[in-house]
Amino acid sequence: MRQWQLESGKLTLSVAPDPVPGPGEVLVRLDAWALNYRDLMILRGEYGTPKLSPLVPLSDAAGEVVATGPGTDGFKVGARVMPCFLQRWIQGPIRPEHYGSDLGFGLPGTLCELRIFPTASLTPVPPHLSPAEAATLPCAGVTAFNALRWLQPGQTVLTLGTGGVSIFALQLAKALGARVIITSRSDEKLAWARALGADHGINYHTTPEWDKEVLSLCGGANLVVETGGAKTFQQSLNALAAGGTLALLGRLTGITQGVNVQPLVYKAATLRGIYVGSRDDLAELAAFMTRHNLKPVVDQRVRFDEAARAFQALAAGPFGKVVITA
Ligand SMILES: NC(=O)c1ccc[n+]([C@@H]2O[C@H](COP(=O)([O-])OP(=O)(O)OC[C@H]3O[C@@H](n4cnc5c(N)ncnc54)[C@H](OP(=O)(O)O)[C@@H]3O)[C@@H](O)[C@H]2O)c1
Image (cartoon, rainbow, N blue to C red):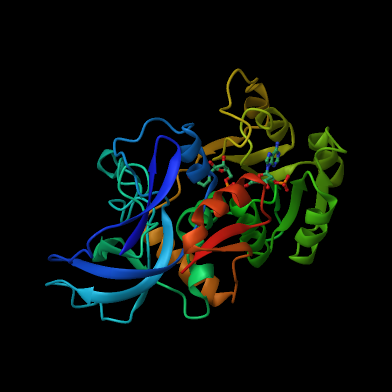
């Protein structure tokens, strides 16, 4: 089987023996792989030093079971599956032993044609989704889903940019009956976001004081999906309504530091850190997508043999997801 490997910032295509599943494991032929901003950071050396070198990159993929090991009764050859992001985080809250089991950094990733997974880490693909669509769920989808937990119909969500997590947040929030304000550097992308149901779009280049714009539109967002980090956090806090929640998950503009957290106090607001989610969260998202007939937005598709081009597409700032297909 073929696999992509990352070493010293360089991606190379190599050939490896087909793996054989052991007890409790299945062999999956992967048909589609999705990129996340984290994968770009790992490629650029901005995510810390991986313990594994060379490293098979990427966390997200979807495929079909082609062989089963002993003790995998619930899994049949032909089943369509996707792996969870942190392979050891199956259910409940995150615990110390779950760390380091993230695909594509702590563990070898998914950008290969065949890969073994423990059955506990797999979730069935929603029947209405193609492999390319399903591959986008494990990281970006679950992260947005968890950011939106406890959102109530009629509340207002502010989500930043039109990348993978943010477009998931838009789609999921609309399905939950919320009002959505989204920001982008591009009026064209804002028009696409409106077509997906966004109630308001703010161009953060032409309206640099977008926090004030949010306040004037609705008096403040009940939930902010904070994908930006250093250069957006303070404004996100300003744009938050009293009693609101800021779901802190991203660092598109660097790691947040040296901010004035006083608005959190007088707004009696909640700051929630989000780290993707568990296998059960992925299964819950899959059920939600099925119930609401939601399809992820795949902006660009790149063939497996041209995978390096997918990283360039991500760096250019996609609307939704960049996916590699077999
Ligand atoms: N904590 C977690 O569990 C978790 C999980 C997933 C992702 N993340 C993080 O969340 C962030 C988003 O990830 P992603 O995979 O969705 O990224 P992505 O798909 O690469 O998103 C890129 C988009 O971000 C937007 N952007 C860039 N600078 C911005 C700014 N100053 N203000 C607002 N938007 C800006 C751009 O949108 P426009 O072109 O429309 O301006 C760009 O298209 C990343 O920092 C990633 O590491 C964290």
